Image: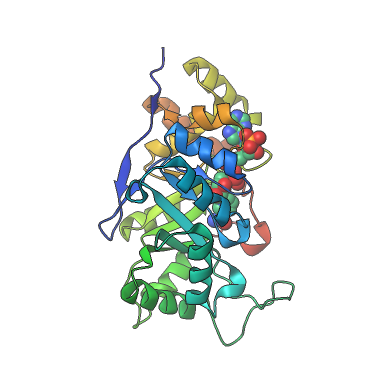
Length: 291
Ligand SMILES: NC(=O)c1ccc[n+]([C@@H]2O[C@H](COP(=O)([O-])OP(=O)(O)OC[C@H]3O[C@@H](n4cnc5c(N)ncnc54)[C@H](OP(=O)(O)O)[C@@H]3O)[C@@H](O)[C@H]2O)c1
């Protein structure tokens, strides 16, 4: 019988703060679902300006009655806000009804011009954005930890080689699951003490990972759901995992994790040797094989 426990583990960030290891992906989840997550024990809520539900996240937090200091709230700067970082952060804080966020991420390393079809500025890059955010981080107290999302090794190197940047991102939030293990990027992040936060841990909206018999058979063998297996695998490789669900029973079961046997952990680590690497999100932004 597999022992499942509500996962309240935390990991240490490079800036000294701690982050819950299983968080709640709040994208497109209404207030009721976010409240269900808080009641189920999640203490990390992952939202973003572009999800347009920061207000719901804030309302759920207040309705839950959970003290602010027990929560870890993540939000993200949208692509068209790269030249106005503090104003965008202030708007997010206002919608959330909070004085600070625990983690603020650059959602994508793309500084896009509002109203265009992903056209990027020629006089501004994510390096400029990060520098502007570093200033807000150092001077205002509105950001507890500063991080990035969807950054490749080359882009992280661009940050670290800039003479004006001395705050190493605390987190890189990336798509990660058994068919996108990103070994080179994970090794790089570990070497720089940047924590990986794994999004789409179930394969995103279509849950394509549930189609693989290795996943479903292994889950049945343990007597757990495929989602619990995938989330537990992400925990075991020391990532922060942020599954999303708007269904109360799934919200409640997804935070309950267990330890996989070494051979099973390894079998999931190498699943892409059989099926290839599959990136679910916005493939046009990445060169195939890029990490
Ligand atoms: N930084 C970025 O660029 C980025 C990109 C994508 C996502 N994210 C973040 O990562 C979070 C999670 O990623 P994601 O939303 O792409 O996908 P995901 O968590 O991998 O999968 C979500 C899907 O799985 C279903 N699901 C959840 N638990 C289940 C269970 N136990 N059994 C069966 N189905 C289940 C959900 O359906 P129901 O709702 O019907 O249960 C939903 O359709 C997002 O909410 C967001 O916060 C960040």
